[in-house]
Length: 140
Image 1: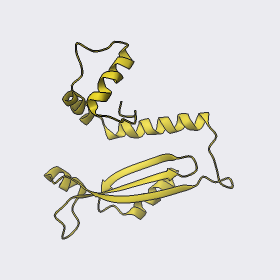
Image 2: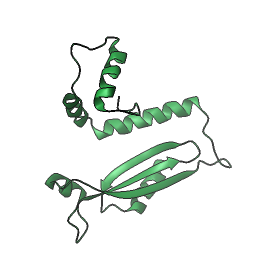
Image 3: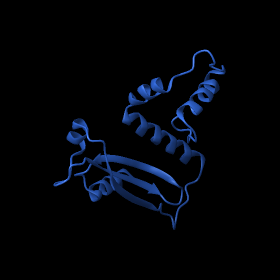
Image 4: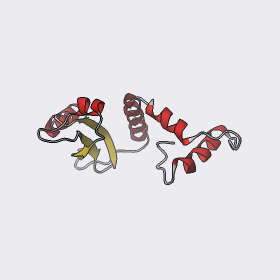
């Protein structure tokens, strides 16, 4: 359901999703939005990385990658975002000097010609964009 490019609320998506995978309209025992949110919190980030890798591998086996003069055209894009102000988040992501807010750095390696995000990261603010870009060079 999380990969379904949702267009509605959790409720609008949950019932049809479970009906599709079970073949039964779950009229008597619908999954609550709260239960869905609790279950979603248990998903390990590593699982999403492995899922992305598997999806990319599968796509690349089935379609020929577009290239420019024999090369893949890759870009790195980065940004920062304010995070909720909790002690655990502040401990992990940090706060810039003189700032009272926690920030995260986002970065992604993107294949421009094929429209694929190859790798994406959300890291502590102190991690530099160049550091992430150099890790992507090693990856690709």
